[in-house]
Image (tube, rainbow, N blue to C red; front, side, top):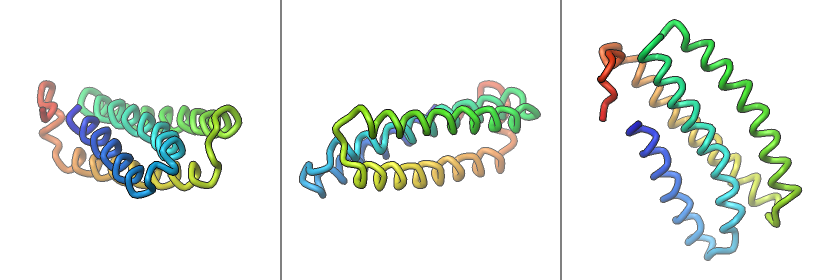
Length: 128
């Protein structure tokens, strides 16, 4: 759970910095570009971490199911955002792409760290 808090905190801080750097010109686009990747990464991280700690043999199936859900989620989110909200497409797509790549890099680093420390799989060793 600590990792999820860090992911959310870093995302919020980066959004504030980016909003300040653009003097508020792209506040909504930056926020909407961050939200879906943030929710997806936190949800997939928590699911993968839980599966790995409790039933490591189910991790691949969990990650495949997570991937399928994210394909549908991201398609619906981008379509809904661009058609239903007053956001400019280019800044939104740039923000979405940047957060998507950055947050999945962070998740990959966390997964690598989790796999390198097999003793952390013990129940109760959540790293809090």
